Image 1 (cartoon, helix red, strand yellow):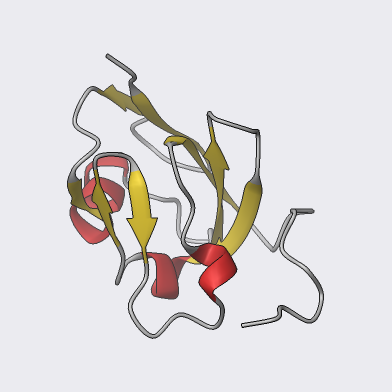
Image 2 (cartoon, rainbow, N blue to C red):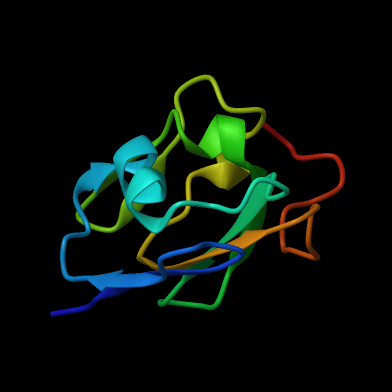
Length: 102
């Protein structure tokens, strides 16, 4: 069973086996610090990374490890096989194209 970790700029880093959950609830459990405004979501399958504003990420949900963000800026934020969420202050380098195709 693959686990999911939430770490970085949080008060309560966590690791869970539950990869089917609402991101708002998961972030609330980890308690991002006040200055945190992004999170880098990492895929275990291929290491793909997407740096997503926390407000957008909080609208998302995980279904068996697949992140879906309704009405997200790009479908490139819908990361498969999520294993880590690294909460950050500011956008971090990622694999999302500068001008996403969708």
